[in-house]
Image (cartoon, rainbow over all chains, first blue to last red; front, side):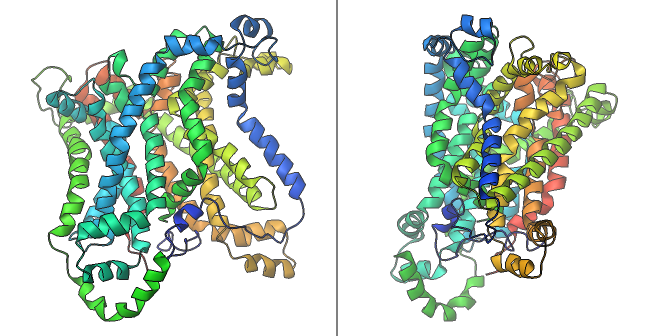
Length: 305
Length: 310
């Protein structure tokens, strides 16, 4: 048990900070087994196709007219294609508003979250802070806390601050629930940076802040980007707090907006498909473009880098 | 460039080791406090505050309430929905851990072999994992639609008309039907972790085994599985933590229904607080599940707190 984080889970080369990201895109693993390459590939490819078939079906349905869908059923190849579902869904689902709200929230939350987390991670990994173990235990315990233990008091707190039904009200709770994971990843990353670097900078008279901003952060760019991306994904997807805190339509984020939309479009299957796609499109695009970082970050976070 | 500086520094490092035990004084706190304050205000304090509210009969609206001691906790024993929810939580936990872990491991082992297009395949299998849970719920609600859903249409198309049914709308199938999307979106994560772990297994172990005439399945059970033990532990711990938090998916697909068939502690807590105005009782439910979640994951948290050996 004690060796769980260091034994056979691959440890990125300690001296190379870029290694955390590299875990996602591992160096070629040369397998001596030459048999079955093609068969395995075909099996996995067919499996993958089945695995994402709900999404494929969603795309096809979203670009066919409702009448065509009803006439020939969900699995038939469309006879006609149309973009009308998207324009309808975009308007009825008020996606212009929910997109904007989710984007604003992202911009308010993610940079602050990454900065605060890296500061704490720096203190835990490179500065000799007192009660270090206690702080780490308390913060990492946050990984296990279900959000709903906090919602009643958080709601009261936000009401007393006058920021219910306000995107601003979500920033605090989102930060708090993001900190444990971010600190976990960042502190293990910072720890791999050689102490001598900091000692040398200190000898040159640099303050802790200077070291943090001009040495630690630039050297940790891959880890910071990974953490920021994962944080952005979970902020974009968060539902429970948003459901409780935001009431009026003008303030709703994508997940809450999508839920309302789902109710309104219950009998319009093609419109619903288009709406779901509109809601997930940014996250899917971001995933395809940034998957290297996402995969690396998830693995690093779990295995302590 | 970083490496160059690093190696230069190492030579001078030795004499300074002793000083490391000293604490850094005030400066570290300036770095730590902003995050700690946010964490305490929005997570630690609310969690303890809930502990207090769980001892009251507060309705969530009126300014006054009475302290009723452990009454809310006692009442949970007599609440059939809590019993239902607890059972569902256990079923949910077991099923949404076993299936993703087994499928994820199988995928990882196959992907780690000689396969073409590995990054693309890996990306495809993980895709459901990045979607918002509400969207996953919408997609599957749509697939399960009794009349126009793809699931029933497919069953009818292959001659299994008898199996076509309102999957989410009847007690007998609702919970299973909600767990399918959970398995779908959660399989990618164990796959990624196992894949990373598999790449850390030294190749010469397999080479030696092959020389000794060990079969593929012998190699799997005697080399691969023992080497994956740390990964198993992490996968299980994280999956366990995750399954206790179930809320979004059930809220957005079945709303706990039909009846109470798919209620879990999280949704039942929500309904009590925000629909029935039993805030005291609702927070008591939240406290119970939080304590269970913490209890089972303390070993994991402790392991993450441990010092690096280096």
